Length: 325
Image (cartoon, rainbow, N blue to C red; front, side, top):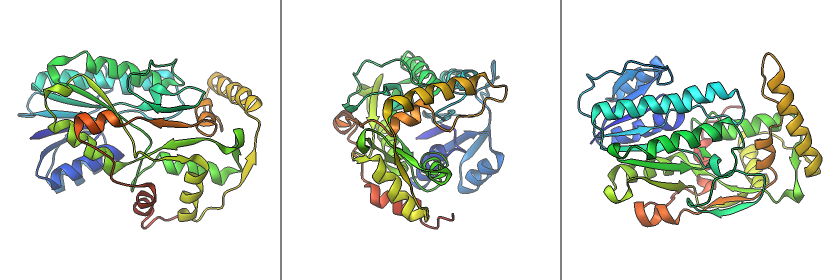
């Protein structure tokens, strides 16, 4: 199978390319970082330097045969200007779909996000059929739009995966952001510390993608939740990561209602400033420390034959092997 991976120079896309190459797939890596593309080329991948977020981007047609595409490219952040997320996640997906159609791709695996489910309340065992609430941020809003675009293109055999909280060696977002926040000052304990969430090791996401690539036509147009299957207290996640990183954690009990008001005010104020700097606390981040969340992954088990293999302790050991603070 010849697979084109967008976002091949990012965390998930890069790991996917490396794993597929070791398994004998013919890989085309598409991304913007020329140095990382060169590294993939050294491993045996074909590469393509492109920025899919450019409007009216001329799409190359000399790539050769491509059987499937995995669309990993995205702007992922809990805060930022809507226009930037729209360019990366909506225009970028539109460009990826045009490229897939031009190449005659028969399976398009879209990396979506369970952020589309997020609301300021406890949400456990959430299934793919849950009606989506109002988006919590620009990332969630644009990922929902992008996923809808993908699923409306049956000619490319779309499958959409919603992996929760991807972490692993090379992660530059999830655990690094949590540890950076811990270094800045006390972290909040909200609602007595009941907050919990399920994360996903990058290798489990890669295996889910391969399962979607190999699945039959019966999964076309379907959405699948992907997670590690362990709902863990957020406080436990942070403290276990901090131990491995050699960081001391301080906690402070904070009443939820005033904290929500403060986060909203900071969010609005930051958007009104010319430089648009991310506030120290966003509504989304506050929600992660306040509520219980978990995904129902039975559909992926039943329809894709996939199940998570990496428990959090093992995943942390792999993530922090050789970690330098």
